[in-house]
View 1: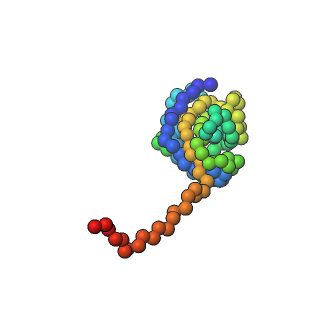
View 2: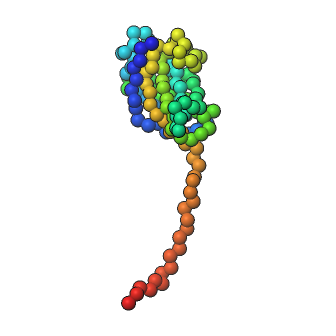
Length: 138
């Protein structure tokens, strides 16, 4: 299986949330593969504090694609922990395959990192009152 991939900028998504939109530049990899492909398989793996970890694989919904940008809808349902994740996007000719070693996969198109957040606030901003009657020393 040929391998071509770009390492891109960081992506930020919410953890355990369906129907999130990401923008990637996936079409530029088509020139490196002898076989065309019609779908994208995306595998998201938690790697914070570990080389292996929680993972989901899915066939991304292509909302829009042109030579510059690919708009995909993906889910992070099942990934409940906030933190850093690795993503890999494979070009494939199957609308249902979620196995990157399957024969329908043409090759690795892009690899990168994403951060999943859970919108939890870890601190409280204290209310500080400072009196106006400050006496300075002589």
